[in-house]
Structure formats: C-alpha cells, structure tokens
Image (cartoon, rainbow, N blue to C red; front, side, top):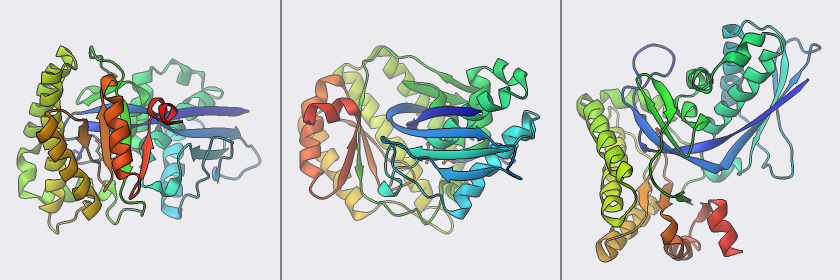
Length: 330
Ligand code: PMV
C-alpha cells in the first residue's frame, strides 16, 4: 500500500521565535504566514511488513530535486513518524521517501513543508490500520505536525495561516494573490539551527517584551490586511513586517552568546529595499527567516517591479520566484 502527500512551504510575516517550556513546540507568541504554494515537499509512504523498522530514502521524480538527509535530519524525520504511529496506535513499518521541488542546497528551508507532507501522508497511511485517524480534522492534523516542526502546522492552510494559542487556522483577507520571490544569499547549512535559536533567544534581555511586541504587531497587521492592499495599507504593512524581522534578528544578536544570520549580501539587499521605499514610497513587503535570504512579497500590480528587482540582483544571487512570476519571464 502506497500513500502520497505534498505540502507547501510558508514564510512568516509575524514570526514564531521562542517556545513555551516543555515538549510539543508551543510558541510564546502567535504567528502569521503566507503559504508558498510553489515551494513544496513530497512524501511517499510504502507499507513494508518485511522491514524491521521504518526507513528513509530519497524520492525520485521528474519535477523533484533529489535530497540526501544527513543523519540528524533523517533521525528527526523518522522520530516524528514514530511519534505519530505511537500517538495513533499503529505499529506497522513503512519506507518513507521524500523530496522537494527545489534543490536542497539552495538555502531554502524545507522543514515546514516536509514535516507537513509527512504528517499528511502518515495520517492517511495509518488510517488503514486505525480508521479513526480519518476522522482527524485538518486542524488536528496540523497540531500533530506541529509537534514535529512548529512552523509546519501553518503549511496546512493557505493563502494565510494564523497560529495562535488555541491552535492553527486559515485566515482570509480581502486581498489578491500575492507574488513571492526570494533572493538566495546563503546556501550553506546554518551554524545555529532554528531549534537552537528558539532556545538561545530566551537569554536576550529583549526577550522579556517579545510576546507583547509580536502580538501587538499581529493585531495591527491583521487590521491593516482586513482593510485590503491599497497603497496606504501596504505601506503600513511593510513597516510592521520590516520591524518584525529586525526584532527577531535583534534577539539573535543580543542573545548570550550572540549569534546571527545576516550576511553582507543580506544587508546590501535590505539597503536597496530601504532606498526603494524611500524614493518610490512603495515596494515589496520584505522579510527574513532565521537565515540570510531575503523574502519579498508583491501585490499583483507590482509584477514589473518584481522583474526589475530580479534583474538588479540576478547576476550576484540566485533568485527563486513563484510560478506566476516565472512564467512571465519565459
Ligand atoms: O519550525 P521551526 O522550529 O523551524 O521554526 C522556524 C522559525 C522561523 O522560521 C525563524 C520563523 C517562523 O515563524 O517561521
């Protein structure tokens, strides 16, 4: 028996950074993300009664870039599957195959999409042996995924996903589809993983006010988005999103010991975006994850700007863009 699932990546505009003590990846503040439908992970589960334990192997396919998970990532992935089996009362063994539709070494995080895809496929597969799994709502499946990788719970919903104390759910705003682009500054594996970052930020003197700052920004951003994406609102949204990623990166840099992800290339791009906003009074929303890459979100009427920015940076950096932008450049 074979079960397949695929899940998208997501980029948070209000960040999940800091966990409540104890297991389960419960966040110290709510987060809001845009679902990146075109950057996806694929998981295939094959029931294998001949295997003494679950195994992982790369998934192959025309549209897929091959990955080789290192020992630690493989173990984390297999452990999550084992926890799902325990929680759902199934003991059968499976071959787990996975891959992304973007290269592994391009600096794009795949933990959210891969854990979401694994959980989606697992609930279906384990449902063969415990039919009550099939009754799990999407929210409940997302909560199961959250225990493996916090940000993966947001990949169950789109185009916007809100993860707060009570759980995770989709949220609608009266806006057109946004366009996503990411400028790849760093392709190496991060020296400090996001799991370590969640722990280390609690040592920053600025962490004390973090929950309030993030919740206030979230409330403001949702109010703005509820009004739509007209220019005044867009500008206000840019300011909030900009302050939010700097807040997270400032937590990193003021932890003890301090650490950081910003590279000269990131700063160069951020300065360019600052100048653009100052001269044009308009531009993309700009954000960064726990990494050096710069994510940009555009309104539908900003396609020409997206192409201009790609032209500006493509000689120096790799750029990934959503299919809608990519198709236009063909
Ligand atoms: O899900 P994790 O533990 O990899 O945490 C990811 C946290 C950030 O990507 C830095 C921010 C976010 O909200 O996605």
